[in-house]
Length: 273
Image 1 (cartoon, rainbow, N blue to C red):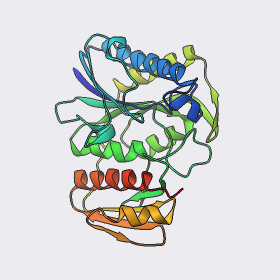
Image 2: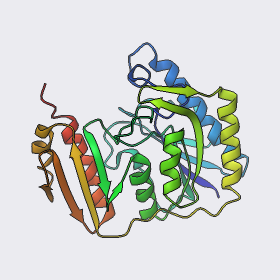
Image 3: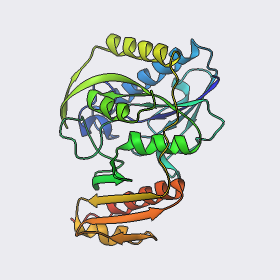
Image 4: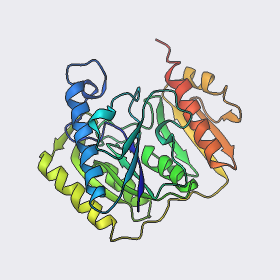
């Protein structure tokens, strides 16, 4: 194993529990950004112990300019910037030996998952092929479509349940325990570092398979406000299935994924205030 893809979010990072941590410009943001960098460097250095030489990191949080290349270990390159066709999965391809998701969080609609959502707060509920999904599941399937196994995911204990449901052997690193959407019991950083060390060690002793969703694909999405649906229905192939719900069907996974990204982006920007 020589080359790893890392998608790095922020809500699942230890200590992060509020919008004040995750929104650039807030008093608490820079602390959360440093925590994110610390956890990211921790997992990179753990993989280096096993001979991994190259890491491509995709900054996957919000405006996607949270990480700084000069703060990352040697052997790293950074995908930075907002406008990426494949968003949190930009840049992944079959050349990677595996993928890692750092700082991920629970899916939309969960009351005990810290800062739970699925891509944006415009999504109230999301299913693909009948599976209630979060960012971990839909992104794992993107990796699987490229033939890349999802090796490890970090976040709270509620997220670890979603990881287990993949059934691929993917390891979880618990960084905190959810109390509510805006509160959690945070672990000491030394404990979090030990959790990463143990998970990486277990991962290299395991047979982890890519997560594959079978074609055809059906998205069933409920948006938070009815007017969001009126705008989201501009995406070709969508159809109304309820007052605030729509459906999208396709035989190709990448097309389905990109349709979801387009739908949630349009919906998030069409809130009527």
